[in-house]
Image 1 (tube, rainbow, N blue to C red):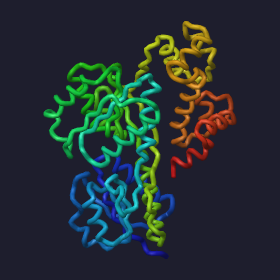
Image 2: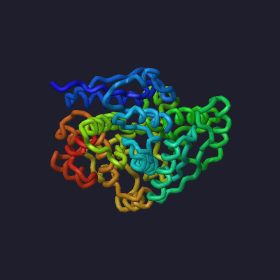
Image 3: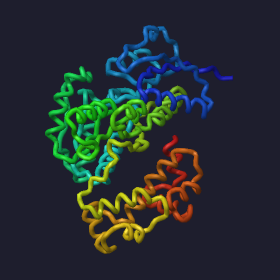
Image 4: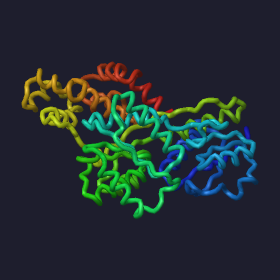
Length: 383
């Protein structure tokens, strides 16, 4: 029987992202029956390397480092190493990380689908990962033809004292055009932005809609109102990191380009739960669609729930949202289907739950909109 491989995991356990990385690594071990003996400890993101690390005689390492110096120190062990933090970018170490462009495109769509055409950016720290995410947002906005109307980017490398920082953030919020959607670099940033907005009585989400990243359920549900957030799919990042390390320990060459993992979804909570559409007829119709899209409604049902003719409603939708009422119905159905496909519910049941008349019709529409079948999409998101 092959010997177990000794694997060092240098991953923080204090945040949901790190814990989800560990979940993904654990899932890889279970699903592939990998003969791994894992060595880890409770740690925070900014902690130094374990004192016992130099005495570790192992076979491989997966890390979520906090600096290039940490990556260099881990590299000195001479073991196969996979990095899962942005500080591994452009360094001689295999990187598995979030697809920042896809993440920011998801954020832009989230805002614009709610009628929010003014988007801003907020970060608490001047670190590589935050700056990389900011640049990805600029690219996504440019592709969508949307302007960045403001950015809060302090020069500090640590979040700093919140009470002294809050007044500066309040001034920045007041300077923004309203209504505005703000993508925050992470959930901690989002929670602080919500607190600052509340201090100056700026209505959320009516005047400022706030979206975080990481989907940490503790942070997101402690805020008032609860924070919407992007789930980066950290579990899949962990799974792919483990698969890559296993291949490298078997003798495969380390890849020269990063493995970019697409985000999982946006978990919508009250901080962005708004329809910021000026035209009241379109706003009313969109509200009806969002409440009833998965009940097998048609455009005729939307017209019946509105106060204008079908032809005028079609015209207003295209002028305001750039798509037809039917396309909006399908967009909501596909969005809901993607959420359900991340679970174990059968595809045939999902089709019915999302308002499709048959599983074949659902499969055809999903293939057209997403480029793959529902089953393949589910498999891709899982592995």
